[in-house]
Image (cartoon, rainbow, N blue to C red; front, side, top):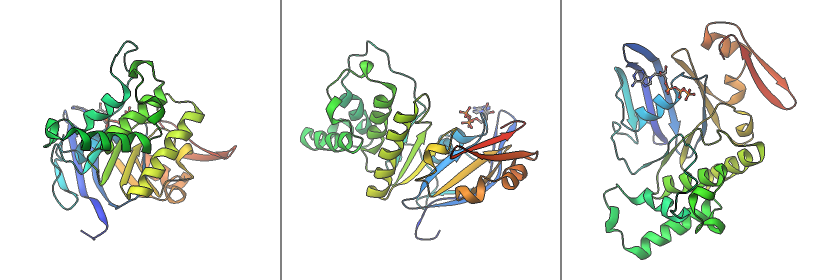
Length: 256
Ligand SMILES: Nc1ncnc2c1ncn2[C@@H]1O[C@H](COP(=O)(O)OP(=O)(O)OP(=O)(O)O)[C@@H](O)[C@H]1O
């Protein structure tokens, strides 16, 4: 492993339920990189995150997370899973939800409360959530709830942050806010971020590289290298056109 790599996959194959989901995936991700994980529905984006979390095992290939095989409950990884809106009547305060990020790890409830509160406060500040820290979470907007999940994922001071579709169901303004918060965290903490999204456009100004997964295969590179008609046609194995319009990229093809 090169010193700067925090994640290395070599020739990874994943089979689930008798189907090959990923085949021959090799890539390395560096410390502090901001990576967008792209691809059509069912391509295997969440599966890639579960692999890094040690929740599923590859059927072939090797994987290293910070130089070691993945394992469940790794404090060095912060994870915000795909999010559904929290119940409107949920009485927990925003800061309580963030505090869950410390539960379930080896310190758990043993954290002294002053230290615990300071960590929660810092994470709330990093996601611009201090002003609604005491609000009942059920009353917060989707974007505000998403910021709490990101704050929760920061509490163990991770080296890798996995965010599964944090931009889903957000309007353009709130998308931009989340992208700006995540970019700031990535740079300030030098944490490697893998952010799963269906639309790369809000991320184009900030990401270092993208991983594009389709039809079991993947490509990694800068957006200019990967999101091109020729690269995506090769990846999908059928004609794909990348259209530039209104300062945005559109990927057009049979099953994109
Ligand atoms: N435990 C499992 N057993 C069998 N198949 C599975 C299992 N988990 C996931 N799959 C399949 O693996 C494929 C990849 O799923 P995954 O959730 O990783 O896709 P995704 O790219 O995150 O999709 P989406 O964008 O729709 O969330 C899908 O076809 C899914 O049905």
